[in-house]
Image (cartoon, rainbow, N blue to C red; front, side, top):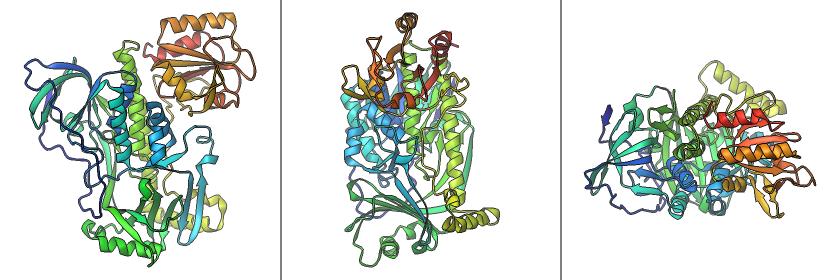
Length: 572
């Protein structure tokens, strides 16, 4: 039996020097757990360690599927005290997940939608984009991005978990010892009322970049620490700048270093300033220094309220595997990326959404435990890709002397004069739903779209009322969803009936055009957006997983569908 003990679990907050009026965060009461004082150790199916955006998304996803779990958080609030702004950009895929979980409307009402980004070098605009015009964003019911402070989303998740039930949120419960064997894990937790022990079938480590569990388990990882330094300024303006993502590769008002500019909720703007690599964190975050920096950018007559300021440095890390025994790693416990392109918190949300339905299927006995191995296949590939992309951006923004600096200088010069060079302006390739190309839970074939995310497109229910893909996924209740496009023969209907009667599968026909529906369970796709989202050009079928990813596609309902279904459930 392996065992570890630790008393000083580090917070993920690396902001040591902060200024400003700050944010007011909610505080949640400590409730003594029922295990306190018990002599017999209770067994729980799932224990989540960490109540940040990743852990809370997993908890909410499980609650939405009706699966019991415990979440342990050593704090009594959301966000991080003293550094509560943190992540701000939430991608379309994350917003689709939040819509399925029932909190998207709250986010949309509070946050700021945007799709236009502009990049400058000096006073010249050298690149721009509108994500609404791009094919991987333009069909969904959710916008390409919403900007909102991370603690708001975490707070909405807490509210939703409380509404749904099933998950026990335990505040001020700190993991201080851990052991595991082939059958279960044992956790020792410290609280204001004393210590207790619980057992768990599965433990999910969402405790962040300083994960004690990862350190103890000695999970191998690749790490790279840069010397780049930044300082965040969250401010309110008396006069509002444009609601667009503005970035400067070389800002004349910041000693020709990079700058980011975003609007968030509450009329608060996030301004990120790249600092000199040898800058003093305490000095660059002083209020008078920050105000001088803002004056250089926006002019001497600009009226600003400083809400929060904090300097930061970053590193990149990625584990070599996402599972160790009964422990799954997700979010910053699995990988740490630089902030460019909003690939941090969003990939943690996707980690949680990926694992939740698999845990639920295994816990219910609807899938083989081997299905859980696909979490490593899929989310390690995503983590590695996100680290690669953000490291390239970091090198572009702070190039090493020699070839890297020469390339950037040439790229900027060309982009100022020629349109073809503008895509070379790498200030952060915006996060997308990562495809899965090597998953044991997907069935790949020539022309198949397996491993691709299905956008949350609009559709019509059988009674002509409006709906969307997420509505159908929620109707499926965590089971696999078969979308059958086009006419179905009597033999097809018989095969589908047999499959849905013996497997965790719900089936829905999607007639093409005005064709008559042959199945009671059917939806209409008047614009063809659903078929396009499944990447089918004509009649055929798509096997959609509860996380909105395609497990397989095909042209005929035959043995290949049966094989794909078995593979997706971990049976082959």
